[in-house]
Structure formats: C-alpha cells, structure tokens
Image (cartoon, rainbow, N blue to C red):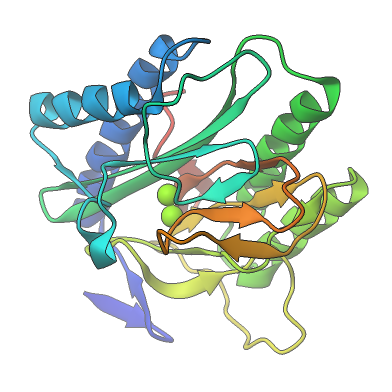
Length: 255
Ligand code: MG
Ligand code: MG
C-alpha cells in the first residue's frame, strides 16, 4: 500500500472494501439502536452484536484486541469509552455510548454513537447533540489540501463554544488493514504538531469524546473502563471517513 508521511493511502479497491466493512458497522449499530430502551442490559446488546457479526460474516474487531474481552464497548453515563457490557439494567435518564468495530475481508470498520435511554436531562441531551455536531464539524474539514489539525481545531472550537470539555487522553486514528493506523487525530490542536496535509485516499476514524465536567480520566480496576474523574457525563461519536477529491465520504453512515 502507498504511503505519504507514514500514512497509508488507500486505492479505490481498498476503499470499496472499507466501504463494505463500515456499512456493516452502521447496519449493526442501527439494529442495536432499535433494541435500546429502559430495562434492557448492555449484555443483551453484546449478544445481539455477536449474532449480527455471524450473519454478516465479519469478525468483531475489538474482541481480543490488546486483550479487550468483548465485541462492543458499552459506556454508560460517566464512562467515557471502553466500558464492558454487563447485566445492569439501563434506566430512563441514562446515556449509553456504543462503540463497534468489525474486520471484513482484511479491512476494518469503526463507529460509535451515544444514545439517550428514555427521558434524559436537558444537559445530557445537549452533551449528546454537541458531541455529534463536533464530529460533523471535524468531518467537514476532511478535504484534500487541508491540514490534519484543521479537523482537530474544528472539533475543539465547536466543543468549547458549546461548554463541553474535550477528553484529550483518547484520540481518533487512521484505519484500514489495521484498526489503528497513523496518524493520531486529537480532538484539540496540539501545541507541537507536524504539518500533515490531507490527501485523497486517506481514511480516518474521527471520534470526539466530550464531557460536561472534568477532562480528566480515571481507568478502573478492569484496566479498560475509562471514567471522567469527577463522574460527569461523557458522550462519544465516531465515523470512519475517506478523503476524496470531492470532499469527505462518511463510510460508516447509511445516509
Ligand atoms: Mg471506535
Ligand atoms: Mg476508533
């Protein structure tokens, strides 16, 4: 595969497989979304996700990745990312972030969404909306010739303008024949940064994680579950996007 400054440039054939992989992730997330309501538990979503992976003939990308034990990351309320599915009942007022990845014909799909469970507070609703829109602000800057950090800057500016904190510990990433490839894509503009012009054929997983309070992270005893230090609510949206001549194409969306 061709590289530019260490970043893989995908050809049309590779992009077509990435398109399939990410479309499957979107279909699975849609199916899971239809099951989400007060009273269910995230382990039910995990079981459903495993069945859907079998039906689509894809391999869950996260299970076994650096020892992560499940197909889904299910992160409730103050959990930012990497939460384990469990048998606790979801209740009205909770928010749930679901992150899903698959491997399909040697390429990866990766996408995340945060869902409201029943009736949620105005603050929680706002956090979800701001995080989703921050992602789309970043996507809109994903055009050839722009610098990579214009994506970061757009996410940062929108998030801060709307009163949310950026979790800096976790970043977006290149994606392709590996789940995590170069470059790292922070959700803020780092003080020291190389120039990375975006090129047609680069594929990025853009994934803002925001909170209503502290941007500090605490990792739980399971070595995965990442919570906000002050236990404030956190949301996460992610799309896999390919940079084309005509601008960004969101691979993990059915629209
Ligand atoms: Mg993900
Ligand atoms: Mg990702």
